[in-house]
Amino acid sequence: MSKSSRKQNNNNVVITVPLLLELHCDIAPRTCTNFLGLCRRKRYDGTIFHRLIPNFMIQGGGEKMKQTENNQSASRKYNADAPLWGPEPFEDEFDQRLKHDNEGIVAMANSGPNTNKQQFYITFNSCAHLDRKHTVFGNIVEGMKEFNSALSKVKTDSKDRP
Image 1 (cartoon, rainbow, N blue to C red):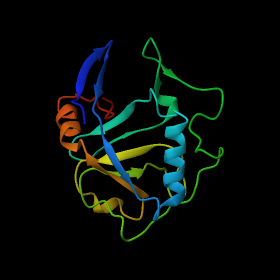
Image 2 (cartoon, rainbow, N blue to C red):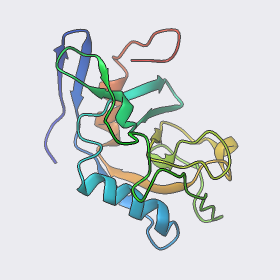
Image 3 (spheres, one colour):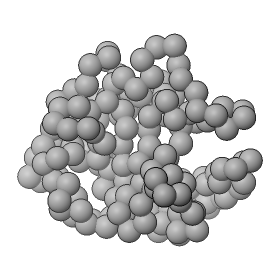
């Protein structure tokens, strides 16, 4: 994998770190299908990680959080925060084999039971309190050390925004 890079883009820090994900499509098929479909359709391209809590997690993936040329958030004409197959959220896929038991866990962000859309997060530590509240669907298998190193230098505001 190539090295990470960091540059300043107006008021935002842009960090490029290649990550290799392992997805658990056999255990969380709908969540993985949603994530891969959004990736294939480039719906995550240009999105920002809008929440960073050191030693806990980083969250992103919402199209409403896309960056524009002048660093304003942009919304699309369609339902920008919808999952792959429509405007309605989809159900949780919990399995005791998939837990928040390490750094690099990739899981769905949600606002309660069965409210998955397209936002996801990556953990920096074990977060057992999130088990059976957020669908775990993958983990980072390469690049986590570089990702942590790059993010350790990023400052956040009082609302955990980088």
